[in-house]
Image (cartoon, rainbow, N blue to C red; front, side, top):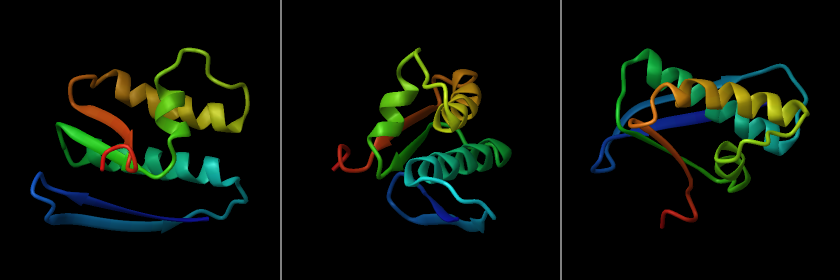
Length: 101
């Protein structure tokens, strides 16, 4: 499973790009969540603040906003994404890119 991420500033200029590969077989939903987790970790590690994560899958922001997390692998990945975001509520948001247009 491969992923690609890019960081853009508020005017849309690319400031960082990254890609990676996991030797794993996952569902599309799990893969999207793993990609989000990687970009959250990267943003934190380079000290970014006021970050808006845009992803293609509306299911993920919806799952992040509820307290009843599914008891499966997708739920495990959602929990891993939620944990660092809870520590930075003023700095990070996750939206579906279709909803942000």
